[in-house]
Image 1: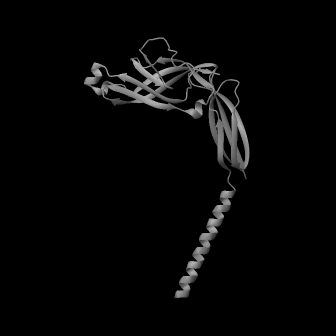
Image 2: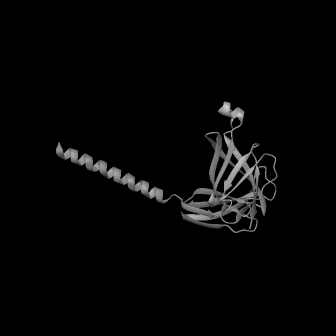
Length: 207
């Protein structure tokens, strides 16, 4: 009885080991993308893009320019597709790079939280996207209410309908932003009337 149990266990172990080896061998036949890096993610029309990758299989990089919805002809997406093939199988990974003109408009929107009688919207503009090639030219109010805007150690209060402001000219697009706005009397009585987001519109300058 004991010998039969030992024999049965050994055979099951052999099957499990064989299956594991088969799965490992099968996985080795699959194409893999371990790393695909593209930088920067926002460029000017004449800027270069740095790419690198680590794959298993034969790699091909495809580049395709795609118009951004609602954008003019000078603003588009450059789509980089890494295709890896091995033993008749293929996988892909896509990264999109925004190509902007020397001056381009960008909308910054953050969700609000209520602090006392003030709506506060804050966030960080993605450093990986903007890099060091773009700075702010102007900032405009896009919320239809007075806003206090803080960024890069500077601040400005700007009302709705006011011309774009140059207080932040030359500061980097990337980094922390904070937008504050006092509640109106109606919003103080009913907080549900307060907007859940505050927005500004910046003009970015390529350099």
